[in-house]
Amino acid sequence: MHLNPSNPIGVFDSGVGGLTVVRALMERLPFENIVYFGDTARVPYGVKSVETISHYTTQIAEFLLAKEVKLLIVACNTMAAVASQVVQDLSPVPVLDVIDAGALGALAASGKKQVGVIGTPTTINSNAYARAIHQYEPDVRIYSQACPLFVPLVEEGWLDHPVTRLTAQEYLKPVLAQDIDTLVLGCTHYPLLKPLLQEVAGPGVRLVDSAEAMAERTAALLAELNLANPQRSSPDYQYYVTDVPLRFQTIGERFLGRTLANVHVVKW
Image 1 (tube, rainbow, N blue to C red):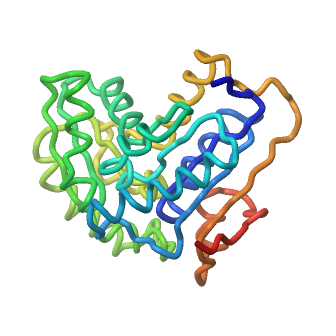
Image 2: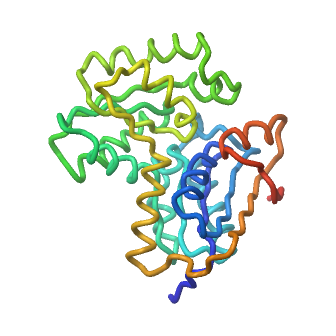
């Protein structure tokens, strides 16, 4: 299949969280066109069954493939944890997922091979990060912690709030007790908590932001496949969502770090 380098990159997520990945891509690859899909009507995915998540993921991947994307990025950790293979099996274009990118980022950052991973309950229970890291480096010790309260706190905008700080101290306590030197932020909402998490974790722990890791991985893959957009014009960004919930614009713009325009609502 011949892929056109000026075609867009397709990025999808269960809601608005994947906009942190879009933001990292915009900064790292300023000439790439991007089509984003957020399943805002059916979020959260973190509590759904594997079958349901796989079904939704297939539906979204097919929607983006119909938009002639040259690359698919699974930006949602929960989707990547349980349905990454499903997307790879159906996609004629390359597929990158945020867990693989985060795993590679963790290995690059860790000297002691003692890695902590935080994420939603589904991501943590799936053990996907441990599997991805061990696939590259079997002797790394991994300590995982589900942090279910972080997503609502981020969406509330409590990025540097005493409640969030106390929650972070509580969640990170068992992981930090293991003498980790690297902490993977295994959820697209968590980059917004980076300054606070760094303070709680202390200077001896390097944070791996899976959004940034994904942008690096994407840049490398596009270069390798000669798929980088040769056009140096202003890129086109389109956003598709399944619902425009209350505060969508506010939360979306906080994640994206800029104005959220070109939003289209898809009714299945």
